Image (cartoon, rainbow, N blue to C red; front, side, top):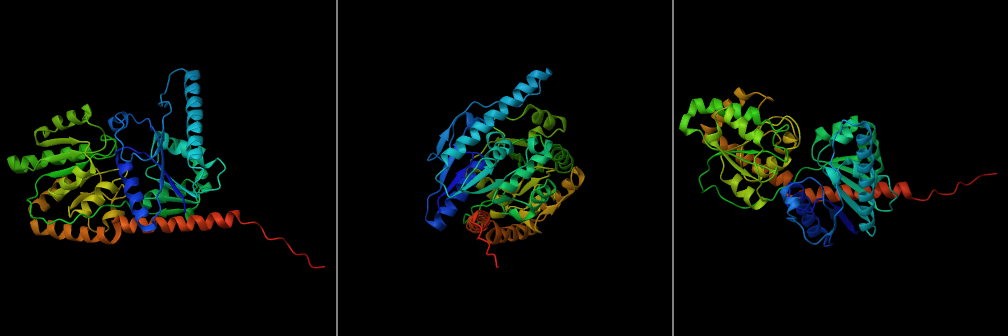
Length: 395
């Protein structure tokens, strides 16, 4: 079966995800997957600098109209219309470049890969099986919830956690179309011979939105009062670019922990894995968004995780997270302190997380699950397009 991916081609978390999935599926099927991509308009230094994750792709560029709320009514209207037509044109380019595929798998992210483009794409006629992975819900589809019914034109929808699945059902997507496929992870062989030190926090693509960074800095302040110079360094990385947002720097100063924060910013997956292999704890005090990437990488590298039950984290860690309430810095500090003082508990959690990653999160299993969704989508498409048998009339 000829398969095409439509996805970000750059060295972002999404580009890495789709490339890893592509390689895992190609290994199983022995068939190459075509990749179609464009500039997404996010303004990320990775995109602006054209740092490709995958070079062998059908790539094109179009002007991107950024969202902007003008105070003048006609300007607001004009910008909305221009964005509408630009996304429609982009969706048509995606369709034309993937016209020879039997199955097209669209990775929905934001901007040029956001819900607006996906809805345009699904509204066009196509003989191909169409599968969509929704990595996150964006502003547009939440502001106009009735638009989400367009997903029912897809043959299958993939999400990474049950929380997003339930949200889509409430937005009008048919439950039988939605499949949960977890975030995958590489499982490198390694031993814990090297000493572990420091705490890790993953800030995602938007460091200051829904990641719980204020809760984290408050907890670090509490820990600093208790541990003094023995407080481990907090290492922060994410896909928010090469520069630290000024608001984050000010927040660290405000809570008096700037001297205990090491800003690593945007790292490649080749650098993230050794970071997780040599750190003591991962901290994810998220209140929204999706944290399947850091959670799965932590599990694969035996790194205990202190976290909330949000952002798809329970789906990926199972029962092996060290759970905290949202926006509760005191509890977060207590959880971190307890684990810092209990080496055997950290080792026990790390071993259980690694086992879960081997059973549920490795790319081989994720590829199998994805291929199963493809088969389901193909069956649905076949039933929908099968010619109706003629009716026999008995005299």
